[in-house]
Amino acid sequence: MIRMLILAAAAIHIVGMSPAEAQSKAAAYLVKQAIADGCEGRPGTIGLSGAIERDRDGDGLPDLIIAEDEIHCSGESARSIKCGMQVCSVTFYLRRRPILQKVHDMLGSGVSVGNERIPKISMYAHGGRRGSVHWNGRGFAYL
Image (cartoon, rainbow, N blue to C red; front, side):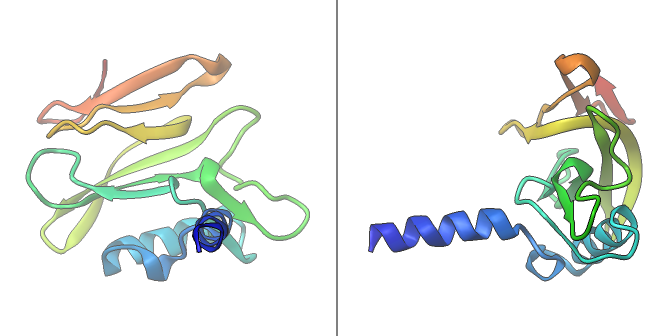
């Protein structure tokens, strides 16, 4: 039984999150669009840490981060076209009622989100340096 659960968890991680598994219709749409754009229309998937839908600005509403380093495309080029040699596009959306609005875009990889009410969002930058940003009430600011 435990072996089956481990295999199922591994399969989910490999396949990644499809737009249908996103928590909201708005997030599912944006994830699907990011895959289509990043893969230039070819089929693709996004890893579990590539679409993080959770409150970022402390208003209690789920926001969205899409990390392009977790997009995997079929065909010759497996990476999103929004990736360079070391880092990829990371896009931040804040929920403003039913709509997720794009508010910030930066380059990074290995995105992780803290557990604070207004969480610290960490990622790697060019050269492998780890950095963080957080919502300061007006925008995402570097820590």
